[in-house]
Image 1 (tube, rainbow, N blue to C red):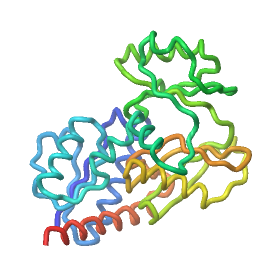
Image 2: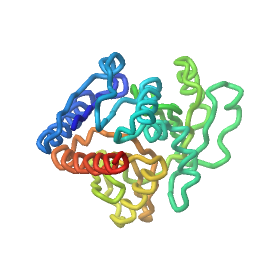
Image 3: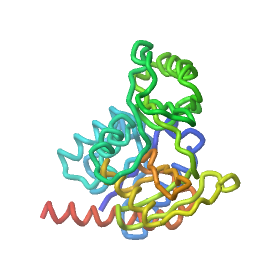
Image 4: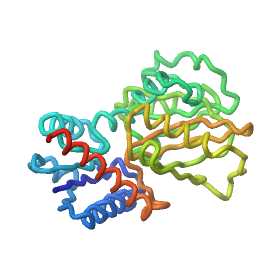
Length: 280
């Protein structure tokens, strides 16, 4: 059985190029132990390669043309894939918010999707935000430090909007700032494996919350966009409430790479067995 791992584009791994590569290598090492013939490719190598002979593909890439090629490949060959192209596209922020809005019980801050034109932003969002707003590019997750910015007052948002518009980013997310502890979570499943940590342990207030509430919210978000190898960000509010603010496909798993690689390899083998059963 043959497995292909595709690295993430360097521009989509700001300050995480090595960590992103290391988790994929670790997963492929696990699959090799499980008697699979594993190949790793850069996104550019994948563009020129014949990928039709693989039984399993683990793509970290996020560029739209590559995802479309992967989608066509999966439709034509039935290859097992985690995460599939539609799930990765589902993590693009505008699509992610649309999926969140259709998911009962999922808590996320009040959010609007805006075009980045001046005319679309004459008025502030309909929801109040005492702590200001977070403005985020509407497609892929961060590619540089300017992709997410905080505006204390709505007048400050226009500079961010102009910067997005200047980079030909068509949509932006406007999200209420929620006071609390910022948490990063990792998961495989949903329902197989879950862990979390503070983004900045030194500044965290360590507000009390229920772990099952955090896991439930994270897995609702993952299910909404149909990712099985996922990470994301959440806020623990002073009253213990959990708000998911982002979900993404194939994070770096830098804090917990060894355990994560075992859990991801296990998930991949499960999907491979299911794909083989369908073919037979």
